[in-house]
Image: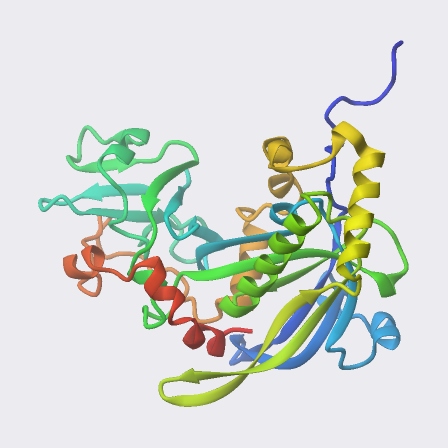
Amino acid sequence: MFSMGIKGLVRPGEPGREIGQVRLGRRTIRDGKPGPPEKLDHFEILTRGPNGDWVRDTALHAVIGERPREIEVLVAGDTPDEVFHNELALYRSSGRRLCYGDGEAAQVVMLAGDRARVDDSGDITVARLIRSGPHEGKFSTDPARRLLSMAALSELQADPEKPGVYTCEEAVRLPVRCSCPLMASDAPEGKRCKPHGILRVQLVAANTFGPVWLFRTTSWNSIRSIAGFLEALWEQIGQASLRGVPFRLHCTPQSVDVAGRRQRIHVAFLSTPLPPLELLDMASQFRARRGALSVGRAMLPALSAVDEVVYDLDDPAVAAEIEEEFHPEAVEPEPETEADPEPEAELDDGLLDDGPSHDDLADATADLDAMEF
């Protein structure tokens, strides 16, 4: 029987369109430029205003309260990976996600026109083509420099007139190791790799189906808490769908030690009001309804395109928004004095070879949490 409808147009489990954000911090402007975020001790709900800017949703706050520390939500996805995307990422104020990874492996994002240069000692420098502004057409040294291997350069085009210079002819992601000095809390301002977490939820108070709100954070403690809870709960219910499970998104104060001084931060975490036995019964009913279509790890490859379609982290508009919210210290790219830049002294051989391990960084997350919200 012939049926109408575009095949593959709608993906199983694809969440609704993003219409709002849940935040634990507020943007600030200093001298006409984005400043350090103002930390909040409560959640703030934002939606798009008439001019396309994010504005406080007064209608929703009239329902959930002016300073809510707990919000009832449903998650927009079936599995922890769909619900809560998290990664290590380096941004720069050129509207670019330069590099992203999981603490073990990473990818450097290069666009057409970007260059890589190998110097006499074998070090590799990445130079980004500046595509707008007063320095358009010139190159800016990438802070994610000297992480590429010689093998990765096979994806680029060697310049026949400039030995050691390679040009990117089309967008490509080149594999690199992760971690590096840019993950450390004392990395240079504007060149710091940070953890990023994006939680997709539907707000119960909105009393509508479909629209999705995003809660974004760069807090190690919040990311660890949310990811750990979702994974544990998913295993508890036998890897049945998380969709439909009632959740509560909380923020709670926590004391951390920063440079020998105690500071108070606010950390986000999830809980569910359902007792364990009721959760198991709910999961059993879900599997009975969906039968062979129950979503588990085996179906993740089929759903992996959802991230790229619904929330493209390489979209310049999305990248610029993340930079403004979480990377206000990122500086505008300045052109190099030469087309083929030399490595900067601040990232010497010793730093790259003996950078902090992923385990070392996990033990020093309090410093980062005190700086982010």
